[in-house]
Length: 304
Image (cartoon, rainbow, N blue to C red; front, side, top):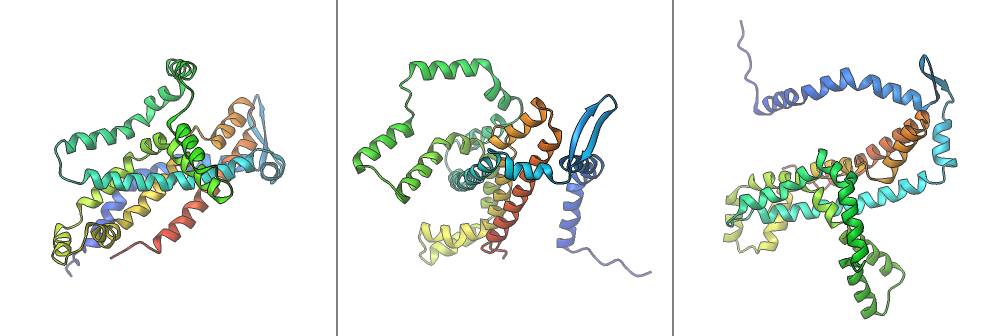
């Protein structure tokens, strides 16, 4: 009998990878394929509810035509959601990367600082997220602050100061200012959405060999040069991972306009066919954006 060929490191890692995702694959095959098919068939039908259950009366692509050609809100919501996703995802990646750089430095209380930033993951998930958006006490507290406060946020005051001192802006400069202020206004959401990305970047930074930085120091490289010549190229594959995760996380948030519209059509108006069509359009747009942006980012990723 011939001896078995030894399994290489790359094949061994691939086997472990497939074993790791095997529970998800099995769960998807046994529990997700059928509901997905039913949802797609609903999107092509006029769903009627009777004593015998749901009945799909085929209307071909009328639900999709209604979404794009008749519904006065969906196209506007889709464009606004995509534009918000782009700048907020970019802000999340940049924020996560530089926070990971800070947390990777050696200083007292580093473990505590890392724990504090990871709290964003806990606070933005599960029950605590529900408390934040649905808690009546939090709503009353917010109303009280708005009633007795000045009504101006930090960004409102900053905007007034800048516009006063610059004599007002218009045209492209106005769009830049508006985008900048929107990002500053959403810094809380950016920080809450950065927990996982910070951990991913931090793990990548810790895997960079210290000898590379030592060699750069011997060659007289500055900190700025080391950042762009060593750190960013070595960490670039993880940027693609974090980008895909950030997009999916943004589109899955239940507080955006399209998700609220889908829930309203499904739960309040019992319009299962139309809500299914909106869901599939939203899913297709999400996958298209992930594919296009991943293709662009992969061109600049260092695979060496």
